[in-house]
Image (tube, rainbow, N blue to C red; front, side, top):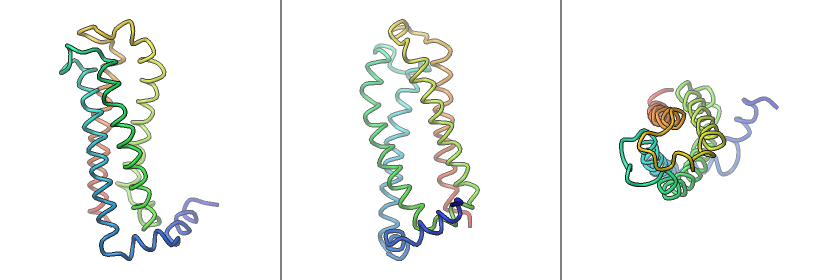
Length: 163
């Protein structure tokens, strides 16, 4: 089955029709989506700023990681579910929407950046956890994360202004 056919099927589901036809359901889900993204961007930014050495130098990287990542993961899960529901309401339109595609691409890049950091850089955190200047790979991951999440938000906002 091709992606456009999956999109057509998805938007024909009962749930998608309810979201699309309701006067209050789409804006409610969209509000939840935006609030969840605020949690993701806010919490991940706190960690990224620590990686870049801008804040939190009096605390270990692991301390901040352990405090913010549950918020980041929970927020991302809620945002993903709400985003999927929004997408389902008009999947064919969104699939062909350039800002939507760019947002998905940037989300994929943010995921790759996170995976590389988690499985490569962060596994050696014990050796640099308290350093004032962190390894280049950690700083690079933090900078990439900030830039990528700015683009996720920008493309997300752009979606609503295109046809």
